[in-house]
Structure formats: structure tokens, C-alpha cells
Image (cartoon, rainbow, N blue to C red; front, top):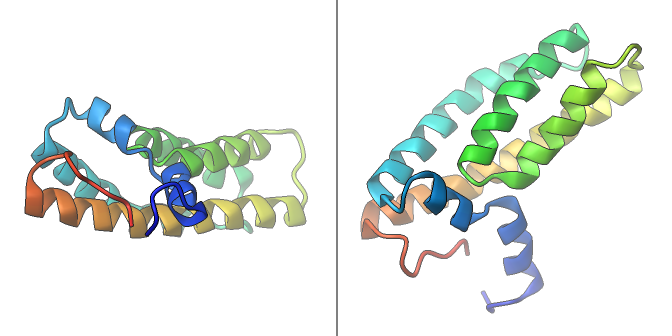
Length: 135
């Protein structure tokens, strides 16, 4: 991947490696462990993201994902969760609005899981943030 390319810039908005490094104090092993925990929790979260369920259920799931996502640098996912959570806690949510919001969260969750698995693998191999790349 070409540094500064559209693809690299897109991946950098999905996962902020500087945030991950900051939250783990630069400890690559801790970061890899945190990413593994995040990815294992994603299956549970995915089950709670049901747009046909009570909006409070998927809003609560979005709230949980939002904090976890931001702590590992998955800022796009955290932002999507924030928007969906706010919608789910509003007075009335149409089925279409719910479906769109939950679908966006699921899409961002899938992107984040894919990139975070790649980052976790690199961290486990190199045991450092130096030279870590998303692509």
C-alpha cells in the first residue's frame, strides 16, 4: 500500500493506532491482549444488534461497543455507535431508522474486527508498535 494513499487513509480512520498505543502505554503485548478481548466480545455484541428488538437493547449494546471501540482506537465504530445509541434512546424510532443505524454499526464493527485482527497479529509477531502498519 502506498503511504498516504486513499486506501491507507481510509484504514487510518477505521483504526487509530496512536490511540491504541496511548491507551496501552505503548505495551505491545497488552495491546494484543486487549485486541483479542475486543474481538472475542464482538460475537456477543453482534447478537445484541437486532434492529427489530426494543431500541433500548441495541442502544445499550451500542453504548458498550462505543467505549470498547474507542479504547482500542476503532474510532469510526465508536462514532457509529454513538449515533445509533442516541437514536435508540430518542422518543420514537422508525423501523427504517433502526435498521439503517444498526446496519451501519454492524458494517463498522466488521471493518474494525478485520483490521484489528491484522494489528493484533503484527503486535504478537513484532512485540512493538514501531513500524506497525494497517495495510
